[in-house]
Image 1 (cartoon, one colour):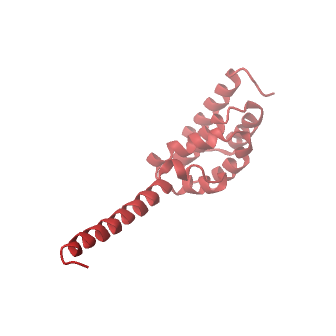
Image 2 (tube, helix red, strand yellow; image 1 turned 90 degrees about the vertical axis):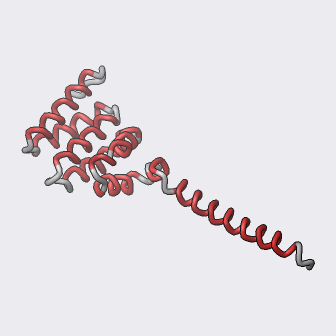
Image 3 (tube, rainbow, N blue to C red; image 1 turned 45 degrees about the vertical axis):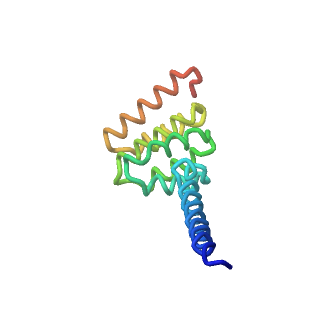
Length: 140
């Protein structure tokens, strides 16, 4: 190997290593972006929602609502686990509303309303029930 090619070889190897590190970091960031985390199973998503700060919950609430009525039992179970967090309970009620499944959502919300003591949460539940009834698919 000639002495003049040795520095070029070192630069090429160093550049390859730097490029490999960048690819690994970008891959890690891509897999851990918020949208990727939302693709988790519903129970994992609810666990993340319950651990998140209030300002980090909106996308998770939207995603839970998109999953439809099959998520309602899990959301109501999470609601029962959050007795000291009225903000989280309001957001969970919103997730039930966002399922856009009045036949399943209204009875679930009515059960939550029966045991809810916080006036703000009660109001949110009542508003969501009214909104589902107005949607054109009223439940009995």
